[in-house]
Length: 128
Image 1 (spheres, rainbow, N blue to C red):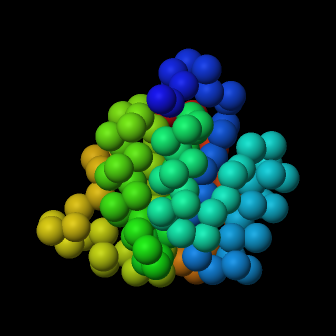
Image 2 (tube, rainbow, N blue to C red):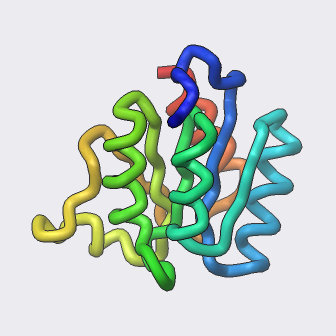
């Protein structure tokens, strides 16, 4: 059973990114901006963690092995409808496919992006 959203520490981010280097850069940038980040290399592992711990934001790549980011986001939204969702991807057109639509109110940040842009977008999303 997942803890209630009110018990979630402020700015807790679940990151799913299959590229090791990118994942490392994202974790460092977000931690430097004072976010608590838990990172995984695929959607399946991130989903398992989400089933047991609460988060305020899911930050996920779209194209990943085992479970893609859109499927992860759909399942995550079922667990916690208040979870904020942001996709990071070099394949933004994938999000536009109506057969594979992401949960409503999700945001997309297209690669390549500067880490400052990522932090700014995360700040903005979490302030909503």
